[in-house]
Image (cartoon, rainbow, N blue to C red; front, side):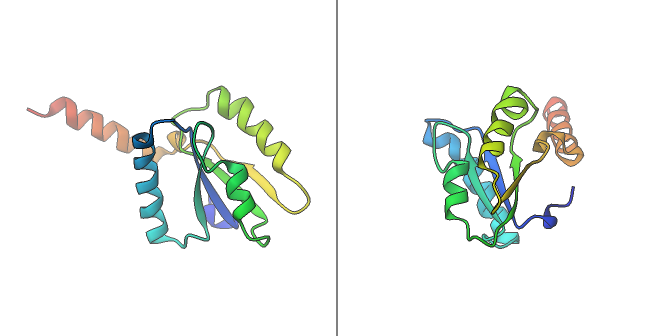
Length: 125
């Protein structure tokens, strides 16, 4: 999957009413925007906190036409199979095309990193 084919990427986290829960996602966004321009990537939450996908889209310049939503989820549950596709279908129009990508948990590099972290913890003395 080549993210550079999109005008903008929205990293989508689930959301929580606990502000501390948001910190890892905000740090991740800061690190990513340190590597790529902040006009290329933003963070949205599915529920319980903001910004929402709608908020992010409203703030994007009109030249950001081809937008991908990259879920920061480990797997495709109901939200990614039903709720988010329905939401994106509603938000897609003549001015903007929204594409839902596979969740980051499907990325082989992420799977390998999780395996390594788990194995490391299991073999620590």
